[in-house]
Image (cartoon, rainbow, N blue to C red; front, side):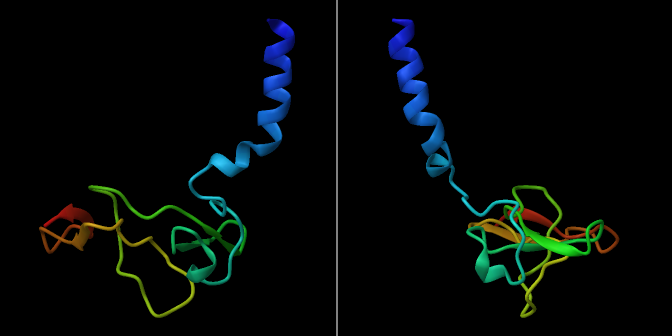
Length: 95
């Protein structure tokens, strides 16, 4: 039984990355089109950019710009980036 488990783990571990939904998540990028999530987020600490997931419900957001890199990611599909109060920043909401 233990031998079968070790063999199964040995087969699955090298392929584990194939099962992840975003292969290019958190990898360096220079344009949002290089990312599976379509969000290349600016990294001020390392003076570069990385692929990040799009904003979910109630998270801070900005619209997708014509530029290559985002300051804040746009919302996931089905959500709208709006501000319900002029003083508060934009967040993702269902509309």
